[in-house]
Image 1 (cartoon, chains in turn yellow, cyan):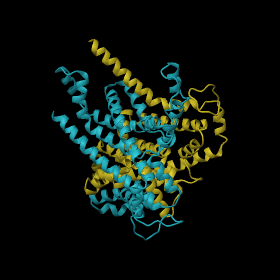
Image 2: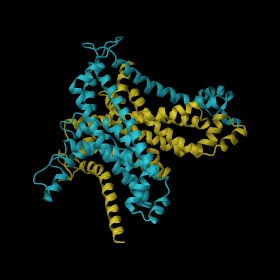
Image 3: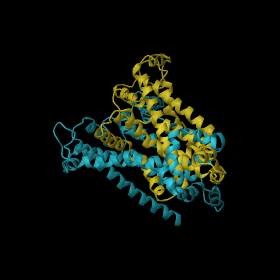
Length: 267
Length: 306
């Protein structure tokens, strides 16, 4: 019994230390955004909202926010459309195309972002599209689509396909049967897929760095460039907003499904 | 029901009309076609172009000399120490980060699997949140923690464990910690998703038969989790070898492959070298991943039959 108690205590201490390690960096970011001085110290000596006031006066950050929003919405639309239709098609018929598609969609996630970024930049310069919003949206879509696709495959695999056949037997066309029989049952999945696509695009950094110029750069890119100059607490303000968006996104997705399912989709 | 047909936008309905007559499998193919075309245009084509440019001659004042064939880029990569050293550094970083990450991830995934209720949700949240946070934030947060006047050194000095501050960051220790933090959430979830399908009864049976808890973990849980461990290893390794943010913000003289290739590419000269450099790195990485897969697969098999 004694040995078991020690093992239990060590086990608990182990995973609580890990929990702290996982959350500490994010806590540091949020806390340092309330720093009064211009130095990045944790914990700060004095607290103030000064950097928040300065943030809303800086056009550099505000236009980066607009860029991120534009790219994020664009990525969400393209990735969700591609992912949902392809997953639906895969479910209708698991032929050779489907077997080819799954690995092809997955591989971009396993290639280091730096190498993807280089190949994308070379490609877009070649076709004369570098530094456009569209090039960043398409690059982010390459990363966001697998998430939507695998979320939807998982959702469709739990869907009762006899409902679709029943709708067809009752005389509904392909679109009608999809809209009335399939869509109401999978709309949570589509919503979570779209949300993940948006967050992935908002947070993606390496490809955006390679593909943007001064007027199209997104928040992580501006933050990176600012940090290379100096450790500016202003970056903590922006980061706090980004973390907040992810927290809200996870909470909404958890309400729509549950965190365990969400976690499995992300792996 | 016929009335609802008109509620669809006309162009969509027009596109769908021909599909009505096709067989089910043709329609499935048409639904998958957009994504297939997208992947070919934005993933396969860029890599073919990368490969083609890496086989061109260099040109003074230009990115590359179009239409030429040459191996100059590759010769430069393999003979220039300035280009070879970062590759070696990146592979060392990849191996170290992967080994530590997978061990920690296995433990944490196991803890999540065993936890229940609110604790389980909290542990899962602690993994999902960093996963959905930008690389930039995950990296620079370690600066105030690990720098010479940072939090960790304050603690160590107060406890009299060290006599003077240690510079963890900027430095190689900082790079390693930052990179582990970046890949850890992916590794944890890869292992957890395999563990969650596993039957706890198996572990209990082993314990009932007299296995100690550490032994039941090593001999029952680990072999079962092998597919997840494999995915965790591959992801951690692939991403750490290509690490850019951690060496860039937390390193001092840490010249990683990603930093070197970025400078070469953004200087907009000698693209044949930058592209050949990327191709070499990608091939070496894929070869290492293949070796890792075979080794881990064999190790997993042996443990299973033991």
